[in-house]
Length: 434
Image (cartoon, rainbow, N blue to C red; front, top):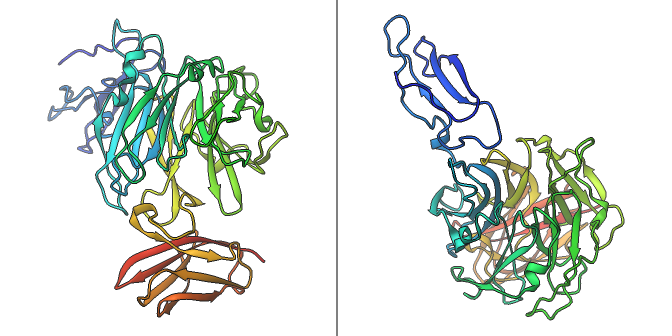
């Protein structure tokens, strides 16, 4: 038998894992800090006809079949290679290697599945080369947004050091991302102390993207963009250091590790924040001020995957409803289905997510009826589903503009989809109010 040799506090468990009626042996570290996190689950099946003979089969039982980045996973979703599918970028705190202080980086997982069935394949374990900053900096937290107003997504990365790394996407709209690092000292000067977790959002409605940063202390820092649309300018000090009076600390802890994500919804912005304790907090009535936001839920969705939750949102299966990917201190990821509408594409005509054209709806929100601008002369069938995917109404159009009565529909969010020639052609999110 190969003896168990796990650094720091190995613990053994005796149970039947292969359902052969005999109890096997599993050994793993019983310490969540600074311990083996990739080859830390040693599985010994019992191979004896009777009695006990334990033969080592793997040192990464279960872990080898999942995405596990060691410690501190921070996900973000974006279409990196412009194939119409959302890809996954994950930063991490690092992973355990004896004698090495830190080895954090960004990991790129390309979506090699389909529009309705995502599948993520590791394409780069040091995306954009952020490992060059290790060991002096680590705990990388990526965020995507169009900071220079050129219609493509740029990359902003927070870290343990408390400041930012900015990578400008120079590829152009609809093309595979191509980044150039911006060495402007401004990004380094935007320092919140420790554990910067950025979000890119125009929070004050002036047409330029601002930056909101979470931090170790649990508050949210708002940095107002005072530059031109194509030239962001930020002060070293936040405009507000207690945005929305959000504080993710839970007594008696003095740390909160806030991770903000803003989700556009038909009735306004929703803020979902990751926390040190592992739960998620949700707020609405979002403004660029220190006035207290309205709490939707202090423990939103009953999600708790362990310390330092880090959420990201995207429509992974093309049904118009957002999925949520959540990272945690243990380095893995969890995926949840939400009831949030995918409002990432505008309701004006043009190419949307997964290559579908977007319908122009007016009024939206609607009360009695909605006018649908179908920019095609071809006949089509239309389908309206509620946020649970249940069919509410359907009909046909001969092309061009048409109206749909919605006065009898229950108030809520609906997804209107047109199919032409049996194929999905266009869609939009519709809000019905009474």
